[in-house]
Amino acid sequence: MNTESLSGRCRRTIRTILWFVLVARSLTCCPSCAHAENIRDVVSNIDNRIEEHRKRDATLVFELPDGRPIPVGTEVQIELKQHAFQFGAMLGGFSSSSDASVNEIYRQRFLDVMNYATLIFIWDSYEPQPGQTEQADRTAIAQWCRENGVKVKGHSLVWNMEPPWAGRMSPDAAEKQMWKRVVREPAAFRGLIDTWDVFNESTESMYHAKAKSATGQLHALERLGIPQAVKRSFFLAKRADPDATLLINDYETTEKYAKNIERCLEQGADIDVIGIQSHMHKGYWGAEKIWDVCNRFARFGKPIHFTELTILSGQLMAKQDNDWSSQRGGWVSTPRREKSQAAQVREAYRLLFSHPSVEAISWWDLSDQYAWMGAPAGLLRKDLSPKPAYYAVRDLVKKGWHTRVSQPTDASGQIQMRGFYGEYAAKLEVGGRLYSGRFSLDRDQAGVIPVRLK
Image (cartoon, rainbow, N blue to C red; front, side, top):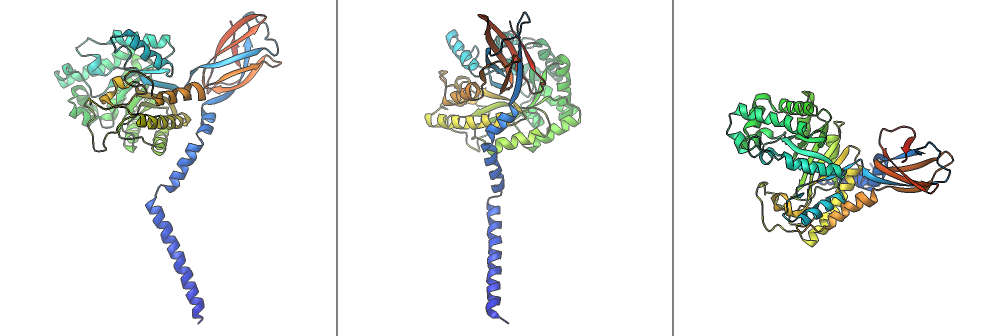
């Protein structure tokens, strides 16, 4: 026997075994290494996905009021005026100050970036006494939004925040009052508010209804079960406004929420949109979790709205701190944290805008002045001065994701262009006279798009 040859084979075998052990150990220590590589690819391809999912090519033909053709070579200026994608915030500081000039600053800061507003319809604050609602106030705000081209969503119709007077009723009577408002609000605001968070935080609704003594909701849940209660809430809201877009919304973003949605859909709930809360008071999720959440809920084939986005510009909540109810003092924004917030906001918005299923991003507290729990959660400081994160969002929406075209018509009086989905304005001059027109770029359009001038 050639002992030297055997020894060499043994050494090679040992080296091979050690190599496999090392590889196995590295995979055990870093189980997400392969996934991390995918996340790097996801981040590096953000712009490519935006180009694919948020823009389209289009051929425009222009029609003068008298039917004359547009002369060849006429210079046409085209600009995006309103994104189809919804960039929003909760409009909580609309009239919170006794100083009208402060309110005006708040509103202008909103309009400079946003095209989508969330108005609060939480039952305990909207109807503090039976029949005494905040309808006049919400109507005034919704009308202002419509006049300024801002779409509106109402938040929310069914939740565990019930008014004390409902809790003094019998369970059956309290439930009837709850269903009554599910019909009343969409019906009253039909034409002004066309989107509603219908059932808020349904996944753990039984637990929270008991903890908050939400008599009406608890009675409905015990009587019907969660899926049937969700189904009924959507049925009633849709009957009140058949044209409304209806959301289910939750802070739960794990498979537990996905399974809850599955059960609701299986039992016939007419859910239009899946709402994702994303309050990051305990720390920024990071690209991997954001993308995983998007993909988890994209499987339902429905639009996804990130309904309550928060990234702090100050001290984070401790991981073990689960007090989400107390208003806290001295929770301040800092320059260093504001810089981090801006970077995280930019990444989050770019990721979400690049995902084909996401159709809306709503920041929760526009200003620190009115922020939930007193957190430094706004894009604006308490004095309404913009943080770097505000400018980060504005630069993305108004610059990076903006379309402005100036080019001459071809021999057919047409223009070939590529732009973001949304509403556009066009203007041109013929024979010394200025003409203008509006048109939209939609995902499902086909053929040449006519632009009627006036």
